[in-house]
Length: 431
Image 1 (cartoon, rainbow, N blue to C red):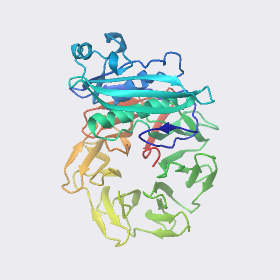
Image 2: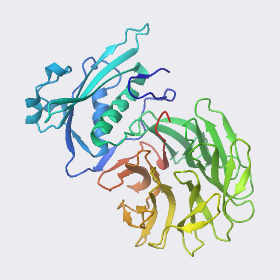
Image 3: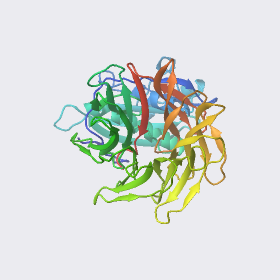
Image 4: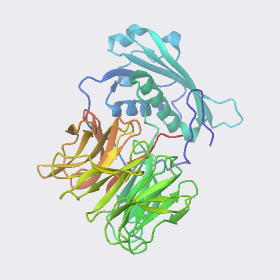
């Protein structure tokens, strides 16, 4: 697949199903989102994807922006010389995105070139212009790329709209295909079943280059860790030990896989070198050590342990073996995930008997609760560190939900069928 971008080269995954099992319900936005107008692109009326609608949805979901409805627009320019800034100031718009879509001059009739620009309405100036191209099947990718570009230009934060998610779906029916490992766009669109089984699937995890996923499957009659190539579909069983085989986590460079094994009688943290298949035991304690996650520099692991009497978050240095407790507030903290900058972590935190998702600054220990629902679990952080996704209950059904790190923006992604849980947010596409 060929995708040309003037500014940001990227590699995209193979084609997806167009049907979306997850829908988005925005439940809380920022108090003063920035008004922005994404004008319907010239030449886009008859295309299979609505570029304006996808970009508007992305920016709305970020919580930072309030897109102007197309029916409220006083004009629909697609060239800079056609912009009348007064029209947009009347609407209170601060930023304007315009563009046009044309069939490529290449031999393929299904290739398209999109030119778009971002304008500062109050300053009456152009902020950026870009030209991107791709096939008709890549129009949704191009739309997400426009969202990423606009978001970063205005906020200074790299956009994550082109990223993907993994999740486990339980169709709640006995027999083959009850449990499904699903990959989808970060907005839930283009879901694709990667593997299905009559037995439970758990703990999906992306490799750093997004070519593989690891997960736990009970298809052999007991828990075992598998990895699966996303391009070929080839699966490989990595562990077959007696007892617990769980919680795989790829190292930042993709060369190692941390996991929990109880082959020696007690759940401990291990690291498997993917090249040599050397297995190294990391923790040695009579308590339960579980749920490893790599530090941002790959030199250590954070994990959950009840070695202090109840579940808390600890960190271990892989070279020194030194273990340090990171959480002290509350009697239950588990399922830790480090933010991309390595300065803070999110976790499942129990407060007054209810399980929430909480954020903690590692240096100071300051903690804040991000979610207000109950039975929240399995947090996974976006690669730009702006949002996190988690599993929760809504109307007695397992759903995915997302919240910004300041808790100002929240939305749900309920499934059209069954329960969904254990989301895993991908790295940036193309890294």
